[in-house]
Image 1 (cartoon, rainbow, N blue to C red):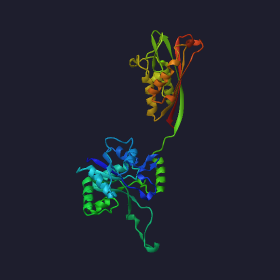
Image 2: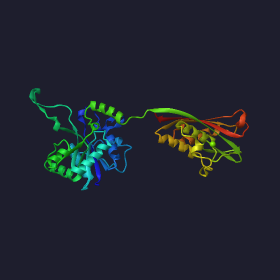
Image 3: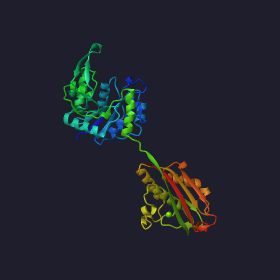
Image 4: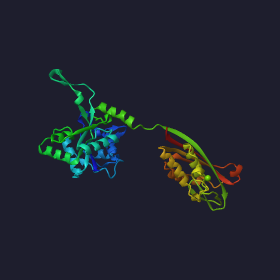
Length: 395
Ligand code: MG
């Protein structure tokens, strides 16, 4: 299969929009218009390299638009020329000579580029050498003369409106552009027209109404609505659950509490490191997911967890939240014991828990209380910990 490269033409000034920012850098759904199609092209498995042709003064806006999309497939931006045709030529020059490659040329002002449309474009170029996405025309078309006089009704059944990405064998497009340059022709409105003029057969394939071009202010508003339909932000719901854990005192010179090793005259007995705070927090998070408890995921009968550091359990529970596209909103723990004193360790404990859970410090609370010498904690037989986790999950 031939390699596929894409050229995104983003050098236009978009003067028809009337605004001061070129349309490809306007924001739709909070994202620069250009980023949508570049992202779509980078994600397509057949596309090996993406070249974006930008205006001379637009480097900073370009960097902002592709922030987070950088990778081995996104090539350095190419500076455009004085017309769209020249810009494509500069793009082709950057691509270089790869005789059997397929090249897609896409307008940056068409953000909503579906993976299926890219696939159709590649297939059509492989089959025909030059092909463009086309839509049937639904409006009745009239030829109008002077004074607004209708001269004829045009037969629309043979007419198509043409979009991008336009797809070509690289040599077909490169030769056509070179020939046009040699003939000093620079009045073509799309790449297919250059190929047609150079004598190549151009075919059409099925276009996509969503890949419309943003030209006017109303187009930008339409793009907002289209983005909401194509990329809905999931509605989040809040969930809270509690966890509770106890470990008995036993021989030792230190104990683990809230992810810290604290020197103490006794240790805590357990299969793992016996940290009741991290265990209660783990159970609280698992509770928000309705996904069992720490014992179900890390059975004490499994020798792998013998002496295990309990941050493993908490990290696993947090991962289950991110696997569900959720996030931790708040973690709250209360430690019940007569000793050791928690106050001196509270901030370090919060910091450690925040670090393990991957949240900011203000989302973690650690509190402590004695039980007034009552019950097993009061008799200094062990330490209890209670926890509440609050998370957000897609509804
Ligand atoms: Mg435990």
